[in-house]
Length: 368
Image (cartoon, rainbow, N blue to C red):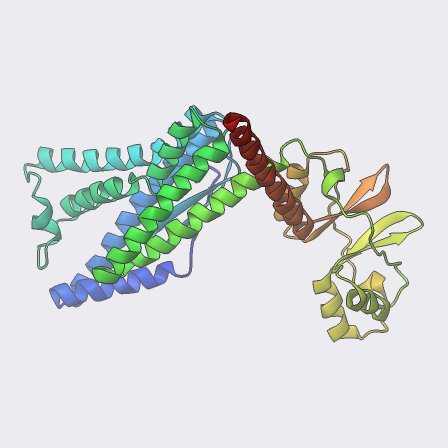
């Protein structure tokens, strides 16, 4: 739809089963259970439209959406990146709630024009209430709208908060504050979930892990900004020749920490022997088979002068662990997910230490 893939997570089926059970328990009929399933599907159609609101506005600002995934706790639109301007992020974050509000308004208008009127919240959602599809769907959308606008990052309200803070603060500081607020809400959701509704515990876990993940991702982007592959790549590496045996590769694995090996023939990289490929070939052909028969020839490469962020994105796209770095066609090193992560940790520690030293110097200067 609109060039965006919509995926349904396997656990979504559990939600449908749960909905059927709850409605059967409430109405004591098979028809009630079926209605519960169809109502849940209608509700998640609203969720998909909500996520498309985010995706289509993001597209307007040049940000592609990888896919939309339906989970039991809602939908997730995976954007390739976030825009640099806070106002654009604000527009993307608020687009989804605006779609939800529009859906609720259309349902309200339909109820009014039909002459049925709009029943109270408890009249359609209370235990034993008749199933009024439009009214129930309207009220649940309004409930989700309110809940989603709570400033619990990375929910939409939290993203709005981060975008608003970014108008005055650095993106890293704004994200840190929004993530802190998100974690506070996660603790609140978890407590309420333990006392009243276990479903809130799942939401608490989503908010907590999402806030931590978004903070780490932004920190990584910030620390890698302006950094070239040359600074993060590993230069001291072992290589293999196509005619080497897998036993030789296995010796290299056991002798060090390297898992993937560039295969070089006449100074040219012709493939990469990955750990997965090595283990599969060992089990199939034994240690005496050749590296050439087990290596991956469809590997991706990096240039030492390109941005490290671009190489990292390529690593994630190809779902691989290692990229050979070629300088003028010759192997200069490799870049791995682990080494990039180590670089980020070291840079974060250095900047944190520099910040504390700067604060200490300012304190000493002020006390003189």
